[in-house]
Amino acid sequence: MNPENTRHRLAKVTISPEATIAEALDVLDKGGIGILLLCDETGKIVGVLTDGNIRRAIMNNISLDSSCLSIATANPLTAPVGTDAAKALHLMNHARDFLVNHLPIVDSQGKAVDLLLRGDLLHEEGIQLQAVVMAGGFGKRLHPLTEDMPKPMLPIGERPIMEHIIDKLKSSGIKNINVTTHFMANKIKDYFGDGRDFGVEIEYVSEDKPLGTAGALGLMDAPDLPVLVINGDIMTNVDFRAMLDYHREHKADLTVGARAYDVSIPYGVIECDGVIIKTIREKPTQKFLVNAGIYLLSPVVYNHIPKDEHYDMTDLIEKLISKKYRVITFPIMEYWIDIGRHADYDKARSDLLNGRIKT
Image 1 (cartoon, helix red, strand yellow):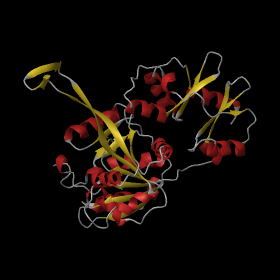
Image 2 (cartoon, rainbow, N blue to C red):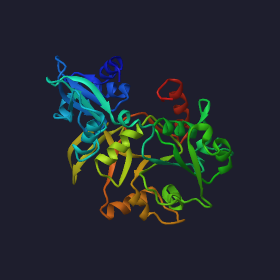
Image 3 (spheres, rainbow, N blue to C red):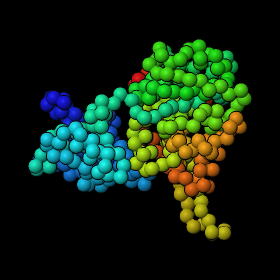
């Protein structure tokens, strides 16, 4: 990388240790690299902050007003000036018990002079990940719009929902995509064909009968790679590369994308011990994590999906938990909407016009 590009990359990922987590999240999103270097006034690295650090903080209910240094990795993996590509890759592969995708290069005083990325060193264009888009549902809650159109084909802007999904997968380096179909399957197949016009390779998995949110996976051959499964009515800016990194770092068998969801109760809530009031909370807000319809499955998971039977993803999750598999959540911080109702559809179209959805 030439010096100008190096300076530009470092400028995008450098932040003060005194910044808040919220400020770091904004810089991380704009930088698009998945890491921030926390540097003091001399330029010395005092910590690094990754996408995973922030997601774990959210899971632990740490305030976004907290210092980003409080959740950063204090002793990050670095390499000295002069480290060649082979040595850098060796460090990324073996210096930690998980793959490292970013390697800061530092001078003798610990100041950042470069940032190496795994993709640059391997000249990677894609990632080792397959995708499945679940597009077989009836979309009954969106009638009359879906009476003669499958929900994934409803337009958001000038393109169908599913085209936005496929474009997002392609931009993440995912080229091999399976699409499960049932209701009005030909409208999907006629539009996308084999995917070549969209820069991907599409194969279709036809459900002769509705098989639930996971059953169609049982019609496919067991994969050799992790599989990203996404519902065909989702609009999101989720970083699928970051999700795969998170899945690998946590040695997960199944990772479930999860979105924070608040429920405001418009009354004072009374807590009692018998007839005695212990406390009353005025119009409290309860916080939940909800299933976002995005999953990462390791190949071993496919052994537990029945063949040609109705089977929901919740059934699979419960089964894996009961068998002591490692099932984890991936907190979604980015834009996300499940287009299940007319209000959701209207909001997604408005959000696209307002620039909230990345295209």
